[in-house]
Amino acid sequence: MSKSGNKKYNYPKQLSIFRFLLNAESFRKNPIPFHKKYFDQFGDTISLKIGGSRHVILSRDNDVAEYILQKNQKNFHKSELQTKFISKYLGHGLLTVNGDFWLKQRRLIQPAFHKQKMNQLVNNMQQTILAELKNLPENKEVASFPIMNDIAFNVVAKSLFHIGSIEDEMNRLRIIIHDVQDFLIKEIRLPYKAIWYKLSGQIAKHKKMALETDAIIRELIEERMKSGEKHNDLLDMLLETRYEDTGEGMSTQQLIDEIKILFIAGHETTANALTFTLHLLANHPEIQQKVLAEILEIESQTDDVVEQLQKMSYINAVINESMRLYPPAWITDRVNIEDDSFLGYTIKAKTLIGVSFYELHRNPKYWNKPDEFNPERFIGEQKKISNQYFYPFGAGPRMCIGLGFAIYEMGLVLSYLVKNYQITSDKKHIDFNPLVTLKPVGATLTFNKRDV
Image (cartoon, rainbow, N blue to C red):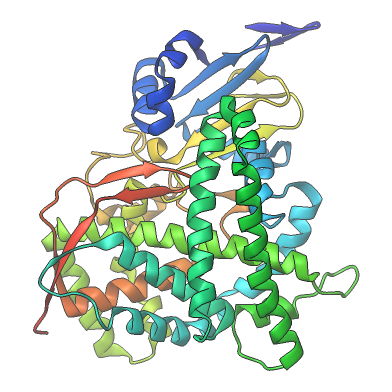
C-alpha cells in the first residue's frame, strides 16, 4: 500500500528491487525465464517499485489483459517504449501513435485490409511464395528462419509495390530494418547507456539509416503517383484512402510512416511464426500427416486459392497452436492516463503495465498441459474456450490490422511445403530471443521431396 496526498494506492505483490537488479544483466539478455520464475513464486500479477512512487506491473493474468486492452482500453495508452523509442526510427504510424490521431489513422487504413481486399492480393502472394520456394534446398539440413524471412519480406514487398525490379532497394531496406531493431533493443534494455549511445554517434547513425528508408519508400510512392498506373496492390489501396472530415488522402510522409510499420510488423512476425510452426510440425509427424490430408481433401474440392484458404480449418488450428506456444508479439505494455482500479488494485496514473502473452499462453490456470503442442485446442467448441485466453495479434481496438494478411500468407506457405515435402528436424528444442518480436534462434529443418 502506498499513498499520494490523501489517496491510497494498492499494488500487486512487490518484487524486491534488489532481487531484480541482481539479475539485471541476465534479464536484459532474456527476460522470459525470470518472468516465469517470478510468476510461479509470487503469483500471476506482480509489481516492482522504482524510485519513490513509480510502479511497474507485470502480469500473465487474462483479467488484466482484458481490462487494459478491451474493457477500459480508453484509459490505457501505449507506453513510451513504443511511442518514443520506436517512433524515433519508424515514424508516427499505427503502431507508434496514441489517442485521436491513432483512431483517425485506423479508420482511414482499415478498409485497405478488408477481407475482400486481401482476397485480391492472394494470387500475387502465391506467385511470390512459389518463386521463393522454387530453389528450396532438398535432402539436407538448412537454417529455416532465413528462408522464412526472405519469403515473408518479399511477400510484403510485392503486396505493397507489386514490382520485382527493385531488388537492391528491398535488400537495403531489409538490412536497415534488422540493424535498427537490434539497436532499439539495446536502447530499451540498457537505458543507463543512453548518454554513451548519443556521444558515440550510434543514435545519429541509426536515425540516418531510418532517413535512408524514408528516401527509398518516398521514391517508390512518387514514381507511382507520377505514372498514374494501377497495380491493385497495397500501395494503390493506401493512396486511394481519404480522411472522412477533409476528403484528403495521407501526406507522403504519413504514407511512408505507415508503410515502414507494415514492412516491419508484416514480415518479421510472420517469418517467426512460420519458423516455429515448421519446427513443431517436424517434431510431430502425425500432425504433419493430418495437415497433408486436409490439403489434399481441400484441393479435391476446389481449385480456387481463396476458397482453399478459407477451408483450412486444421491448418489454421496448427498455426494458432504454434502462436500460442510462441507468440511473435510476445509482450505488450500500456500506461494508464488516469488513476484506475481493477481486480482489487488501485493504481496511480502513469503506471507501466506489461502483459506477457508468452506466459499467459502457457498459464496452467487457462490451459491443460500448457507446454504440449495440441492443435485440437483450436478445433470446434474447444476453439471458443481457447480464444478467450489467446492473443497472437493483441486484442481490442488495437488488434493487429494485418491479421487476415498474415493468416493467408502462412496458410499458403505451409500448404505448399507440407504438400511437397516431408519436413524433419534433428532438434527437439528450439531456442528464441525475445526482441521486439519473439525471434527463433538456430532452427534447422530438412525438406525431403514427397511422392504425393
